[in-house]
Image 1 (cartoon, rainbow, N blue to C red):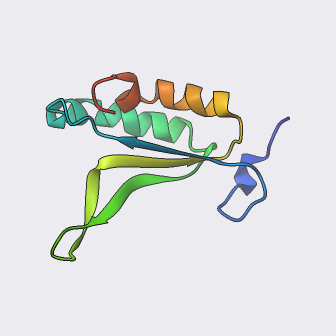
Image 2: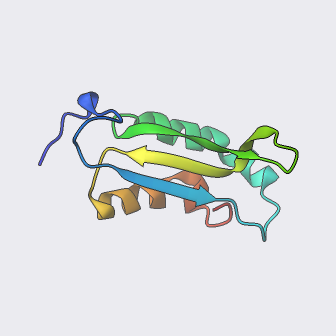
Length: 101
């Protein structure tokens, strides 16, 4: 069924899927993240019709200072179709590299 994705937001009744990815701790990923950033941003822009929101997470360190956690990515997709969500993340450049997430 076709959806009017322009009407999708956090409160819409359309189904949504939350994707979370965490940076692999086994690789030195800083260079790779930098190398893939433009491809990632272009991918996100091409799929903005499907994305409700995306970004990194916040965390609080032991001193209760909230900081941005560049080690994780969160994307809320306007789909309840698990196969569509899987295809989306499989094609996302950071995840597709199989070295970052």
